[in-house]
Image (tube, rainbow, N blue to C red; front, side, top):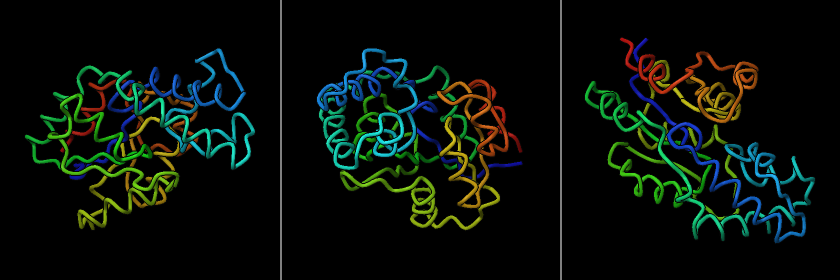
Amino acid sequence: MRYQNIFFDLDGTLTASEEGITKAVQYALEKLGVPEPDLNKLRPFIGPPLMESFGKYYTLTEEQSERGCAYYREYYDRQGKYENQVYPGIPGMLDRLREKGHRVYVVTAKGENFARDILDHFDLTRRFDDIVGQKVDGLSIPKADLIRQMLEQQQISELSGTVMVGDRENDMTAAAESGIHSIGALYGYGSLEELRKAGAERIAGSVAELEEMLLEE
């Protein structure tokens, strides 16, 4: 199968972003009076919408979650976005995909301003045809809507040749809702069980394996 249009998630798919995200969540919880000393417990925050995660994992009210998001952004904008690193093999893979005529995009639930800062910092922006993320501070647009936004603004109508690559269940379910294919990045932060349960059509255990799948004719 040839994937002409490839949508990449950012956190856990292109970059190993655990340190910056978990420290930003830890900072937010501390400011809310709910200290969490164990950063490992905050790994589930990587990927899903932040508002949703504050309510799900710490049973915070909507008002508390909104304040938590503001505190999170305070830390993340200051330093968290750079407590991050690109997975080995990603830049080369992107270059080879483009050389072969594939069009590559970023679709992330992260704020688009943060995503662009990170991609600029790691010299990845020039390797993508377009980037879509959350645009309005404080809102949480479902991942499926972000995918549909990219499909519309890039005028992509051939869904059978379009795939979403991501490491969490929301990436897989959003792909299905949008009518495109999905590949789970098992080297990221989601488990095999999570990805399978969410309906991942294929699963890549490494960046090299992912590249092999994406370059298939």
